[in-house]
Amino acid sequence: MTQQENKNNKDKKNSGPIFESERWIWEKSYPRGVSWRMPLVRKPLFHVFDRALSRYAENVLCDFMGKSYTYKSIGEQVERIGAGLQRMGVRKGTKVGLFLPNTPYYIMFYYAILKTGATVVNYNPLYVERELTHQIEDSETDIMVTMDLKFLTDKLEKMFGATRLKKAVVCPMAGILPFPKNLLYPLFRAKDISRVEYGERFVRFSDLADNDGVFDLAVVDAEKDIAVLQYTGGTTGVPKGAMLSHGNLYANVLQTVGWVGGIVDPGRDVMMGVLPFFHVFAMTVVLNCAVMEGMKIVLHPKFDLDALLTSVKKHRPTLFPAVPAIFGAIAQSPRVGRIDFSCVKFCMSGGAPLPDAVRQVFTEKTGVVNIAEGYGMTETSPVVAFNPAQGRIKQGSVGLPIPGTIIEIIDRDDGVSILNTHEKGEICVAGPQVMQGYFNKPDETDASFRHGHFHTGDVGYIDEDGYLFIVDRIKDMIIIRGYKVYPRFVEEALSQHPAVAECLVAGVPDEERGETAWAWVRFKDGHAATEEELKAFLKDKVSPIELPRKIIIRAKPLPRTAVGKLDKKAILAEEGIVKA
Image (cartoon, rainbow, N blue to C red; front, side, top):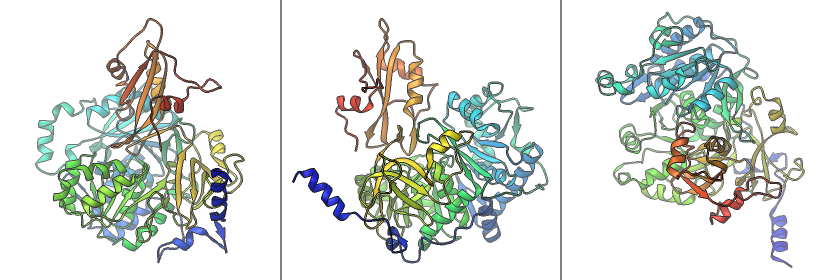
């Protein structure tokens, strides 16, 4: 008997159905006190905030750079912003973009927009003009909310006239800083502050919010009305807007809170807010889940390791969601041994695979044992599976399906057959958190929803205990520090250089970032450029996270498949790069 036959027999012996005896196989592994069948009512998403406001009005909702904001004070601003937006013409169906770093403004506008019945569209502040133009047009964003920072408003100013964008509300950085930072900021950071002309296009935050806070609360159909249009690459690498309904997001909050409920202390827990809210993981887990339970969010405008460690020492966070790159950076910091991490009850890792080496070193340096990996997608609001906060954590697994979520492994050959445990196939998901579809893209929506499942494009298997393991990605994307980078966009930008004949971009394993982007380029005959010149050319065409770390210039043609497509596997093999 061959080695492969032995392996096949072993797999058959260990495999079995994932639904048996009237229950799913993962239910037997659920932590005590958590039920896969817990009720998951769906409500308008702003009920998350209203519930917290009614219970925890005087509690601190967030601390931003030393200034605290209570639920009550944020609530008062939400009402004024909601009234101002309605007077601006915002109503059900309006798309309002949030082009903001993590600040109290994001929280205020997020819930205010939802209360008007309009749809939030999240924008990465690092987007370059090309990305902004595409998303504004594709999402039908008419109004943008931003800050008086030149690197934001300079890009937005170019969107007027070039896109459908009509107005931008500009929020002052100095207005959310504590004394005396609020006075010193305009003096010492004058070069960073916008000098826009306020009027028809740019609107001052103070003018928008100068009202009595009285407005008409929208009547929302939680099942159908879209709360957030969240952009993702889907399964093709082309950015698409995932339509997340109020019910999708509200259900995912209940699922996630229910999953970790045994360790949550409502009204007292402290959530570390270093992940950006424009990312779906942070929007649900850091913002909505924290607000649902009346937590304080320690808000960071960006990832700064020293600032993060200082805030651990000062604010004593109990829950700490992050991407593996952040946990790795903490573990390698020379300061880590002088910081007391005993306050942290649970670290939630998402956005990218958590290497065992990172987990081990982080635990060794901080003493935090309870660090677990989860799995989700933009299209699933995002949480699908997680290792238990109280229960068995399986290294290498992304955990068990969270309450109300069905994960089935489908045969990739026929796209229909449900595979047994330990058999590898495409991960397909059904549950109340799964999106309504892709905005204005019915064909792509139909391609992703087949036979009652959402097809994730990821390959994995479920073991005999119901734990999910991911082994490959069908999608052509690179995940850098938890962010999705689509090679196609970088390749298109690189192809615009007059010297480039052909190019290819692929992900390369990187200890610090998880993955990083490399590019391979062949020039047209008689043309030449240096790696530095190519990077300089790309600087205003791709965001910093998309910029290839390395550009390799080749004299011979790039390898292609039998059907003529550029072959990324072959180029990586030629470089001796092995991807797990």
